[in-house]
Image (cartoon, rainbow, N blue to C red; front, side, top):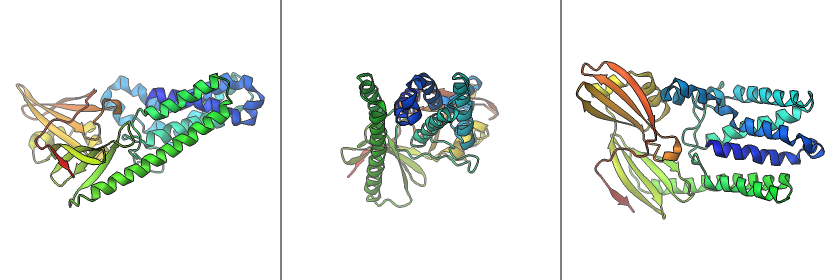
Length: 324
């Protein structure tokens, strides 16, 4: 999820903490709980420091080690330790429990996005991405803001945010059921040798679609109870020597392992070539999109690779049409 959602989640968990008998008995601990839950809710994104090494390094590291099981526990220990020192060495386990909940909820939300996380590292290096929630979900944001307003109006924060998080859980379950229904609609197309991936949008009833055929991809969307295809893109062939040369860069190798939906476009330059690599799962500016640009000289020697953020549309190609 985006940073604003993680901050709001931290505030919400601070409100929820009033269900804890310790916090209910010692409301003066609220500033320390705010510190624990807001910091904990953002702590797994400490890997943002890798941005100083370049976008390609950041994208390789993002949501990896810092979202792992042992990192979640270590972050909670450290943050709770700071809060405990600031409160005379008392209430460590209370601070630890609420910090750990905040850290784990951060990772939980991230699993539901397109990018996913290595949340179960070190037991597995697999990336888990359920494609159920967009990076910024206006409904989840609105629920938190509404809960905060009720809290400020004097309503009991524990009860308010218990209802907020129950509602969010039901919302995620509804999204899952709707996703399954759309997949059933796609299977009715009876296209052989094709796999479909649904991409979440801010609306539960609108989904992006990437269809993978043997030699090409089709991009489209499910909206108003029908499927509309917008683009067809040929799959990248390693028989193309320019493409093959660009794959030698470590970041492109990472992308090929990380996603099944890569598309490359070759641009001829006076002094060589540019190969633009797109991850076709990213069709929105909100979903941390990017384009990787590999520069080669005329002899296909690698010059460098740069990653630009803000890409929001795959290159146009050929076919447009509708599926019934």
